[in-house]
Image (cartoon, rainbow, N blue to C red; front, side, top):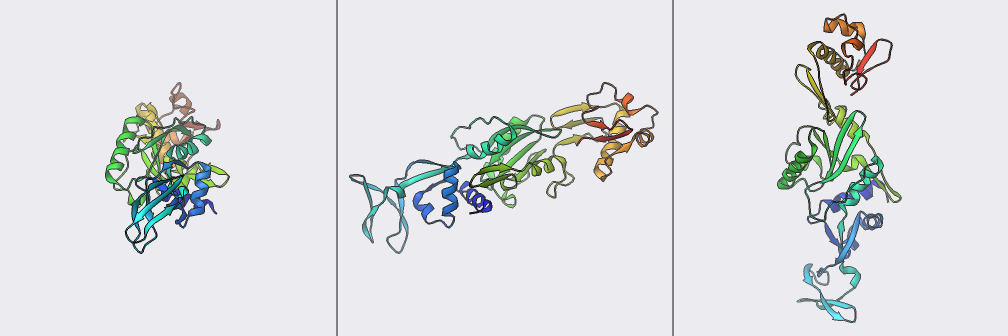
Length: 307
């Protein structure tokens, strides 16, 4: 089995409504081996026995109710096939473990994930992590193709993120999501980030970095990690707010333009010309919280934004 096969099976299970399935269903599924492996990993857990089963004894498969026949035996009645024995294993029932998914993302990032309640929430908060200069809230959600569920997920995220950007990881295909995410919220397919193998899970942080910086094909020019006001008099980087004087704003704008056009670094003399000032950049930003955090330098006259 492959990591792609394991994730494809997990995605199928997550998008079931509700995300419960029986052993009988697993036995007939073309991804049976992958689903059994996911159960071993903890991505799905057993929740007790089902009281119904699909009758496969006649030409028209249909749902039937299970009867206990005594001595550990079970059966059902079909109007066409009569009484049929049922193996107890066929009644085992499983559910997707969303907490396992969230924890598999949280743990490699050093986050202490708090197990969510068993209630079917629209989204699960994974935690707040730092990616480079950006503090970011992470969430997981499934079945976002349902309009009401997507709306509920957005409401939940809006109530928790405050100033920070957010990333919503999901098993729902992006083209099926009925609407746009919140401002400063990126929706990223879970399989871009979470990799599953028989030996465990790993994560790839790069898609999150790319969304925050606006450097991915999906989020090009629209990074969610930072926001500058139209006149560059203020900025929010991650969840950190900065304000600037008119002269400082001209410097920040010049550095932002350089970052966006790919040249990235500017020499102090270039910046002074743009900002129409003779002050050295270090003097202009003396004691400013953005200096050495948002605004970086090499000590030899070159400056850049840490975005």
